[in-house]
Image (cartoon, rainbow, N blue to C red; front, side, top):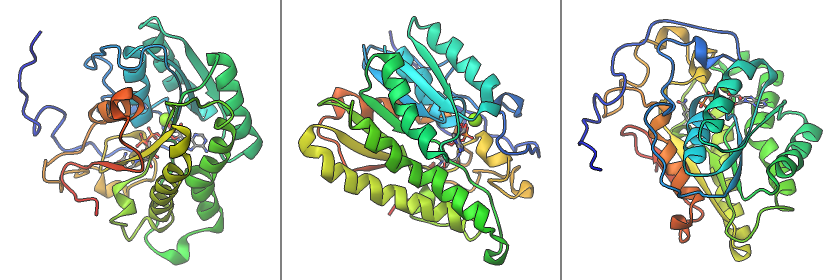
Length: 295
Ligand code: NAD
Ligand code: MG
């Protein structure tokens, strides 16, 4: 089968976005347009056959695109998300099961150390093993002035985005086999921090360094660690405080490609990094930005 060549400028939604906002955490199914996570487009070819993956933030956005792709590549998939996001998560469960794969829903708050440690063991129990860990959950709240940044927000952003990764990896090492893969989600914000995202961008800088350092620590065990750095991707995180509401209509249009990215455009990289094909890839940052350079 051949696929026709497509124009990257217009392959996905390239118009202005309607102004919209929800309380955090937002439901992606209530967004206009609904983010494209590859529900109707991703085609698998057995690249992850028999694999057992846990994806945090797998209900929506980038994590959901990875979850759908992993199932279509033959993996059983557990997803973690916040209890409020159950409606999005149930859609992902149906999509995974439609591929004949096992879907495990493990809702709970990654800011809770006991929950996060147990999450890994629960995923490994339900999946009968764990070889792929995608640490993708994150929160982002725009605040213009550092004086208005509350201690609560700083602590929540750090705990969710980076501190929970230490807890998850500590437990996951009980299970990850030789050939296992850890993939984190960092951001272009790690390299190009915005003035209104001082807490978020700093956690993304930390995720990049954590992932590189962890790759060096684990390489001799045959476990690879890489991180993905997205640019502006149309997801729920952006419309529940991630961006100032007045910036939503133009979201992503400043990139060379001229539009926001869709989660579906990242899925193949999460698949590649988990797969045997990436056997010589560890400690790397894969940026998918629509044009911005990750330096
Ligand atoms: P999203 O809102 O669809 O996904 C983020 C998920 O994180 C949520 O669905 C939620 O389940 C999870 N989450 C947040 N706080 C949590 C908590 N305390 N406990 C458990 N789960 C929690 O948005 P997304 O854009 O797909 O985000 C996925 C990752 O991509 C995040 O790490 C984000 O920082 C990163 N990222 C996004 C963009 C973008 O433009 N959308 C750009 C760069 C990086
Ligand atoms: Mg969500």
